[in-house]
Length: 363
Ligand SMILES: Nc1ncnc2c1ncn2[C@@H]1O[C@H](COP(=O)(O)OP(=O)(O)OP(=O)(O)O)[C@@H](O)[C@H]1O
Ligand SMILES: [Mg+2]
Image (cartoon, rainbow, N blue to C red; front, side, top):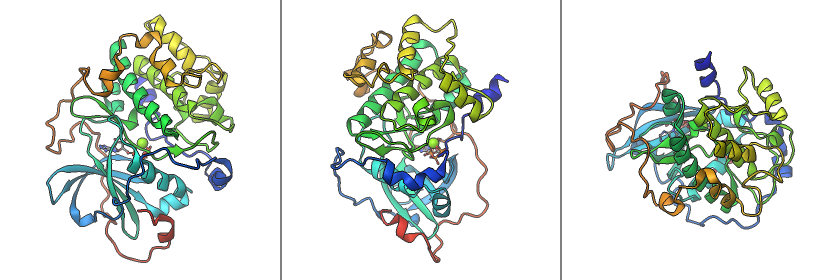
């Protein structure tokens, strides 16, 4: 039971009510001037499929899969996320996909994945990223069952710096969960999957995310702001310490009911400081939710649970990681990733009629 339960939120990312997407332009208040570094768009069409040897699947998602690949030019390993155009169109994710590309192209932070470029063929979009070798935090957590207090604190602190950076650039991430947090060869985090990241000045109302991690205001279809990421941080910290999420249930609907009731049971091994922090993150009262107050992320960083964290050292990766993934860096070692059935016949690189071409001119 415990095990089934714990694998439940894997692959549950969803855009729950996709019909809502059609209203996205009416609902989202786009920022007038982007705060992101405005780099050139040389990443567009910089690569082709012939530049890479496609290797095993590292992960699958709603619209395609992520492959380990090897560059035929420099023999280095990269990860390529392949998205099927017809699935994106069918699930009304065109705008989110174009946003994913734009956000990934622009963000620069030690704890965020780096994208090198994109290209497309008649059927697929391809995003070329650094290959992060240490696997998902999800896998480490399931293997460990739960993390000791200092270990959870270390990962939470790196996540906070990444989310603080995104928020400072008016980006809501919206899909914080252990599957989207990868570990590099030293054990530092890299957040991947910008499929729901959005540059928004104020509030938005698109229903997307992963059930266990959704803030109540998203479920209630209210306009919401960046602080949904701080709610998700609370769920993440809880899950790292307990080994399961606080509102887990057998169906998403039951989970939503629990989220709306908002009662959190803390195992007795949770220290008082973290219970205090989680009470202030997992709250539906936005005037109390830490991260949403005047000092923003500063209030979370100065919370007593993080007392011993030296934030300046952390951002420079000048702090020993609690776990070094047992892999040989730079060799394409993928032993820490789960195995997924490979597609028998890849439709990559096929040139044929492309009815969706006009949707993806940025790639
Ligand atoms: N740069 C990377 N290096 C190594 N593995 C990666 C990388 N990017 C993604 N992955 C693996 O692929 C998985 C799926 O990637 P991602 O989350 O971006 O896809 P997705 O289609 O958005 O998934 P979902 O719809 O389930 O959220 C990740 O959980 C991770 O295991
Ligand atoms: Mg994902």
